[in-house]
Image 1 (cartoon, rainbow, N blue to C red):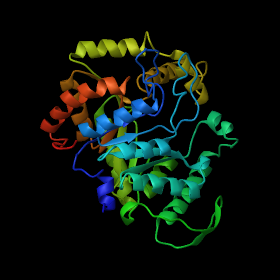
Image 2: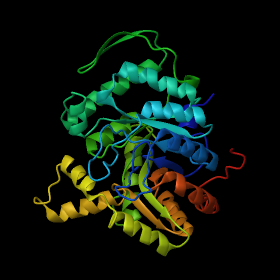
Image 3: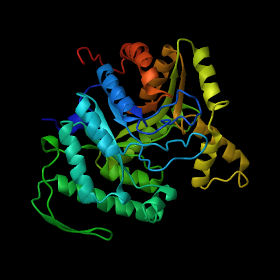
Image 4: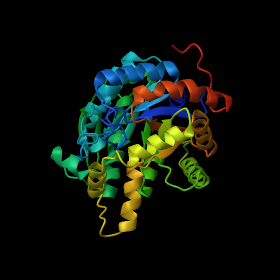
Length: 375
């Protein structure tokens, strides 16, 4: 039986947890027209999960996406729903944690609690919940739902997670009376695997969102948007200090994009081609439109955000040889991050080289354990 601490540690002692981010969406996180871009079909996802599990990757984290970003490729237009995706992958793997990214306002908490427990039992305690409250009005309209104001989003999210946690707990039956949720005679059986609960993550950016994560979650995702990792390290330290004020030892994770090749020059040229000549600028511009960013309002900011989006949707780019990428990941660990979810242009084609060349280097650098015998 796994303890909650086992779940939070993803059942291993790796100092820096490594995960694949966004593989449930077409193109992954690469806003590019390259022909080898990620298809996100089920067979590819299953093969990737089995490969990653055997290689020692710690987790897979999907994106909660319901509608694409247009452009020439309709970036992330073909997506696999994340709870059922996680359930299928957990059945095909033995070691790694698989997350679902759940929009709390779009899924009834009674239904969500039951679906999550089912996936958790399939994975024998390896399911993780990445809870989001949503930002994309275009998607909410597709559901016939109105987006709440930012403060109200997290008020609703608080009631949602409170209700779900009670359903995972020992109560036989309860009523839940809130401002947004009124649930009567709630019964929820079975309970999560091992009498604990799934690992919970959140990626709140605003102070309200961050406070929500500190109150409710085991880990917070935050993007590295700084010129130096030293500045990011100060933010990580601040988050962990704030977590302790809430009585929580919260993990801090970030996101990144990897291009790893035999030489730094080869990797840099591929990255340049993908993010310049082969970029799907139509999708980039549409995403900025949805975020309310207009070129005519602030051209310099628009161009900065445009470049950040095409460089892995604001993730931390790690571009170079195996030595270069390993050193960057070691620096991320030294900055205090507990883990990173990263993506490739094509996960299946690029993961084998990363596993063969970068993972052993990370073991030598002291940020990863050996996973001998993990097959």
